[in-house]
Length: 161
Length: 478
Image (tube, rainbow over all chains, first blue to last red; front, side):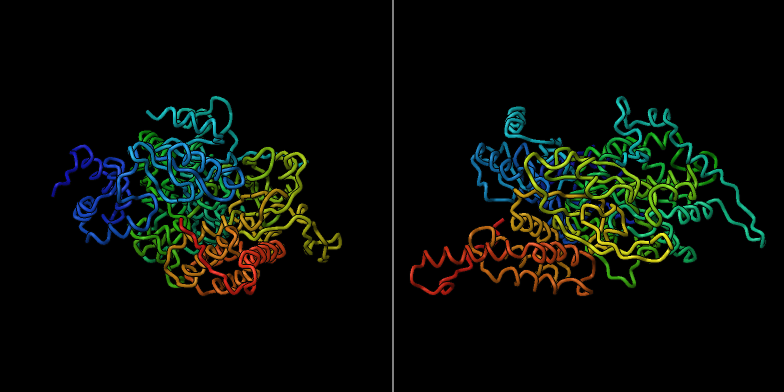
């Protein structure tokens, strides 16, 4: 298998497994750890995690296809997640999503993950990010932004080098 | 005008208040845990001994504390259902999935005052003889997960967690478990499946009541973040004292999230039932934007049935002679508590108000919510999986110029056939209630949209029958 996990990550994973009386429980945490490191969950990664947790690959694969945060293809270096749900909608999230799409040459009608050709940015409409009082909100990778006007959106893009 | 009563968020927004242990200790942190661990067994008149943990459980029952996650179920009663004779370990899961659209209260606690929640959780675990517990935090809170992990290690270092906590002989370990973007994980049995490393397919009840057959088929308690914080205050002030906060059967405080078309959206902690919906909108959240009129309010997170501005309800109230009298109450004058909203046909759910003014396209608002539910249905039960998608498709065409005048009735027909025991979990209700209530209360807008679309198409087809050429091409391409 071409897939190899660095020792540091594997140590982290081994520690995570100890949190649970049953190994299978660690699957989501392992998927997060692997996706954080590799950027996505490859087929090889599914098999590696399954072997690690003494499961069949399907037991892991069915999680990747069920949970929206896991992806099977690499995304852009910066993933912009714009909240789509009602309070943000009332606060202008569609305009914000459109603004990003226009700036980055993506299709504003597409709600799913879209990546720019240079692989630098991905834009995605996501469901409620639980900060409805400061709509519209978004995340840039793990960083969270509130009350995002078009100007603020441009500043966020600006900072992504 | 009622004032905010900050019990849970007492310190969270104070300048200089930080989420670390030192700061929490300076503010009297973990004193309640010490008090809880030190409660001596009590001997009753009949010679029965009541242990410390049992006394805490009784106190929580006495406090009248109701779950702050959505269902508003009595916390003491929930704990009393736990099977303590099975000999199996008992687990506790803190529901930090906060995924009901409109809700952003747990975010404040988790990010600003994590130790308060952890202390409440340790006390709750102690009261229920739990040795291993999890905080299930939604995947979209990566910073929250880091803060919690840091807080847990700090607590471990001071022996508030781990073996023989503060010399009491009680052992407890708590771990953080991250979700990955699925709304259904907020449903407690879905959460349990997810924590077992599976798809979050809710389990059928009976037999899988968490209190009996929960995590790893062991008795399990699932409590919301805010509920667990409340437990700390119940123990600190005593159940009887706690029950004086709020109103009868609606005790304590509640952190209400207000979002949408108001001047000052935000979270406001008030004694339960001491403020009306109108006061929350106008006094706390600054009222509507200038020149705007109220159109609708979703009172308890997106699943709650919508209220229309000007709607009146007949509620029973105790008169001065103790007899029930019926009183007509305007929607804005409903006290924001568990019981009044239920009596008015909706619910206070997760404590989230979404305000819509007269600039709102109500059909679009519902289309937005239905897209959410279609996306989030776990897919286990056919009525919900298919129904939520059909409703979303119908609403998509209504908002994209492809509507029909009968779509309003069509939507209700689908919505009526999803809930009511046809699905394993309450998601069936959650996705139908918005559709049923929006269409019932704003039917003219739905019909008008459909009719306008039909007329436009008829004109375009010039000469052909009004709907003969109707092509239902539009379906969500998202």
